[in-house]
Structure formats: C-alpha cells, structure tokens
Image 1 (cartoon, rainbow, N blue to C red):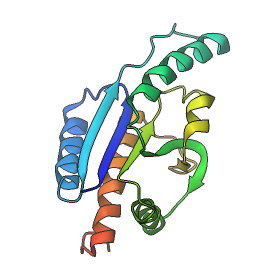
Image 2 (image 1 turned 135 degrees about the vertical axis):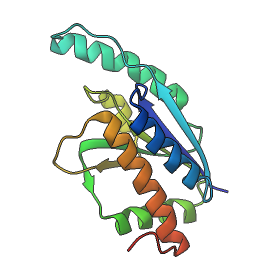
Image 3 (image 1 turned 90 degrees about the horizontal axis):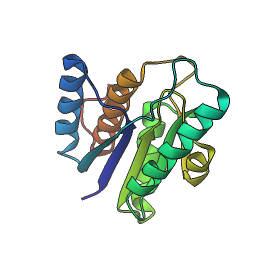
Length: 160
C-alpha cells in the first residue's frame, strides 16, 4: 500500500477543522497509509523584519527536512507552483506511484511560507490558486484533494 505523509506547520485549534481533517484522514485510510505530521511554527515578533522571517523559516526548514520520509516524492504547496485540476492532480499522483516510489510527502508551510532550500528539495511545486486561504483551511482542502485524487484513481463515484 502507498504511503502518504502530510507535513503541516502549526496545529488545528477549531473543532470544525479538526473534525473535517479527521474525516478525510479516515477516508484516505481506505486507499493508502496516511500520516499527518504537525510541526510547530517558529514564534516571531508581532511585526517581524525580513531577517527575522528568514531566520524563522530556516529553523523550520531543518525540522521539516528531518521529517520527510526517506525516498518519498516531495510536493510543496507554494503560490508560485503549478496549478492543476483535480484530474491532473490524480494523474500526477498516479505517475508517482507508477515510477516505483512507495511514498509521497506533501508540505504546507507556515504563514510566512517556507525556506528556499525546502522548495529546492521538492520534486514538485503545486499552487492552490491565486487566492489566499487560511492555513487551517488549506490543510482541509489538501486533505480533500488527496482523497479525491485517490478516489479518481480507484474509479469511485465521489468525483463527479
């Protein structure tokens, strides 16, 4: 069975987000071994300087890089990434599986993004579009799209 890891910065606090995340994680379990890794965001001042942001992202990068499963295909969510339809995303994930990889890892960075060295390590950069979403909602959207991609690959009626 294929392994999917989702690395996120920060923890969910609102019950409705937690409930939605748990539901999609449960659904994903029918298609893959799913693991969620929540990492702490670096605490920054109220109005951080570019240097403080950069230093915080570098500290986060070390933690992120240590949590990526060895040999996993890495996809980072970043505004400058490629936009895909749900069908194209399912196809991309299918291609990863066919390539012989046994695991994929997806990363949602912190509110300030992610360090360049994390983006450079990525096998693929994916954008959720030009709109800005709260990170907690983005997590739910990514979980739903992972589930949808697996359902599409399985020929399920979930995707209409």
